[in-house]
Length: 204
Image 1 (cartoon, rainbow, N blue to C red):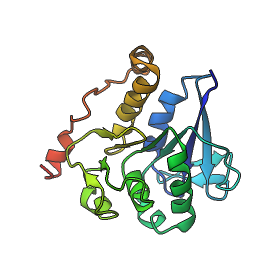
Image 2: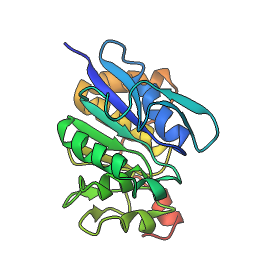
Image 3: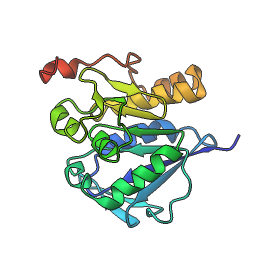
């Protein structure tokens, strides 16, 4: 079986764990998932925590993608007004089998119109700010992640790992997802409705 190609879309100020939590899971599936790093102009992209990450493709040279991962970060506040980013997601999201966002990455999917009429969730600390990107999205206040099939959105930062394992379970089976959780010593929250942070931040 041909490996699925996963494109990770980076932008200046992206959140490290949003990105590398999911990639730790997908990256431990050699021959099954091929991980690519993509940036608007290629080259190194500096994260919100400081370290820079090299990208292999820019938006123009990026090959077809089966899976798309969009991390969050404080700089999504400016990326929602970046036409190159929004146009890239608007084009590539519908072409992929699954497009995933972590944390405030949902703001970019929402601004691109990919979540219109769908359920979605995002970081609970900044929930209302992010949800303001699109009133046509059915924003779910209490959810660890929301899976609508083609589009999957998660709550903040570490929630992306639980979301990723759930996507892997759907695509490749429980045994593979469970083995990844065990190998990385992750306490996998399998209930997508488990969300103590919604209460902490007064959403419910």
